[in-house]
Length: 307
Image (tube, rainbow, N blue to C red; front, side, top):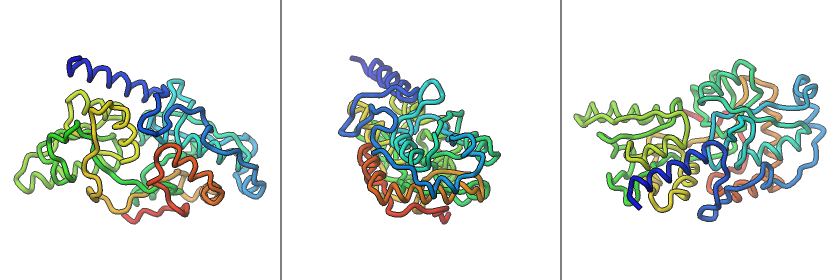
């Protein structure tokens, strides 16, 4: 098979993943699950239910927004309503604990998600979404994941990327509106100040398209969170690998979590509900099931980001 045919097949597989198809099991990570399959049934906690906003109790549901596939946490269905992945299992367990249904809505891009939450159009996002101080101005974060930012590169790492400092003059794909985009654009300016070629930053609206840019040769690397990149590398048939692991890559400690409107009464309810799932072992089971065990934290926290 030619390299072009291989790239085409890989691209088709990634685009299917982005549209909610359930891929086969890859490298021990379960990726074909029904929503909630990884979560043990939870008994309704009446005290938590009583703390929900009245409009939520009246509706009997919470609406959680996502901005498309972010495997292995969120794998959005083509219908714009279905969701699988670790976040889907977490929301299923959380909904049972709170005694309400959690509905999922997919919108186009992270800015639309955050704007919709801040305006009250959506109740929250289960995420995990990157927690940063500038985002805390309009939203509160209930953090349940610690993440790292690395590169997905062609097998063999031909450009020898060891950290973000090695990307001058390269073409790097990122998700539009994400924190990695800001970091890589900042690095591009640093390259210019040092007399080196700027980075060709390619911004895409979702993860599958960003990875496809690398697999097809349009980009030299994709800069993003380690957990989803591990997922995509595992599905690439040996064509991709991770680079820049173990480096700060322009970030301090990086937390990700659920998002609510600023000072929303839902914030502390979600925090206590997620903590219950941590304490009873459900959270660990879900995270391990989806290959994200290294991203677990012991305590759910609010707005843990310091930068």
